[in-house]
Image (cartoon, rainbow, N blue to C red; front, side, top):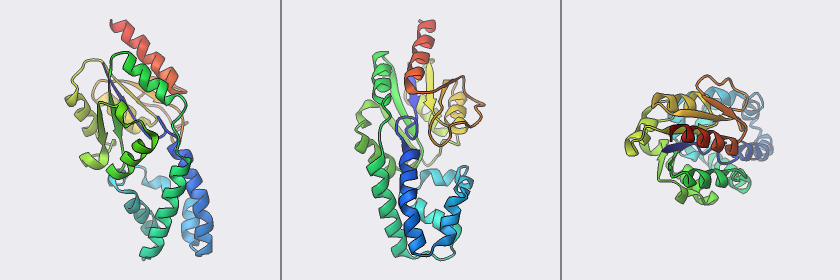
Length: 229
């Protein structure tokens, strides 16, 4: 059995930690009279970035720079460094594993499954999260978009996981339908959508199961596994 799992908003509260960072960033932008950047955040125009494939592989400082350049033709390097440091510091001070994350990971291990993390963003950013959260050693492999050069908007990383650990019984657990669930379907996985975080409430087109948390996802995996026994 092979279980693929997403990181952000599946195992940890990335969106919530990100919101705290934005709340701390707003006073900085207003003090610096960066009103266009403030309104970019206020009007949620950042959602236009969701489908940009290269955005899912960038280091965090490059991501901040990309967002600022969406708003301003010229961006001061010193201000970029200040913004990056502020957001990074506040983000990690608020980043937490969900309470059901470790029981889920341990439960999957108890079923004898191989466990692979498939996550978007840069190597440095995602590995820093894994070290901070203390869960890196729970996985048989880490597939990070910044290392493969492919985001989860493409099937490449899912196919890579299946190539590393060939198996007929595959499960994909994540919070985003158009990446995690669609990618899982590309390799014949049973797809389990955990509805929480930034993408909660979005239409589920590719999920076999929709659950409220990881304990429910674990029960789905157990039931499906028993059917195949």
